[in-house]
Length: 216
Image (cartoon, rainbow, N blue to C red):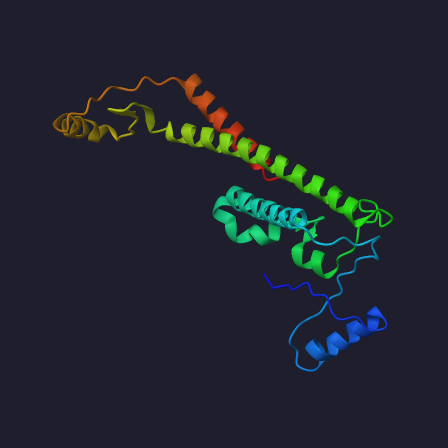
């Protein structure tokens, strides 16, 4: 992904003059950068940065990183597609940044910057809480699915031993029994139960479906 800088340039008589001067210095003359306007309205009464705002910034940044990590976890073997699945307001991150528009409905400019900051803070906290709930549900489903998958071979285990299922060709059964006995393994015939097998398959299908839903 491209690297983006959010900068505040020294003011001219108009914002457009500042924009033209910056473009002339960084884009037109020497092709140092591709510039895009990050349009924000004139907000009512600015506030000085304080420790609380700095902590909120760090908290928001941590939540954004959590979202990215969560997306990477659920994509598993397709982690190279994380960026194309990370969307902001339904569009990819590059489009969102280069065509940013202030949401006047969510953040009315008649309110003070402090109030707008508090609105954003509540939204970030809600995202964090929702993400924690989703991650908990995903890990639970993933663990159950892994246990059920492992159950195909490992039927039971304790601190001392494990019970495994083994599928063999008919001609290899005697040799397997002999080798197992030499290694002090106990071999028992499997009693086929179609109802139990179908129940396991249905449970795996259900868990796989639930796991995919966590991506939505």
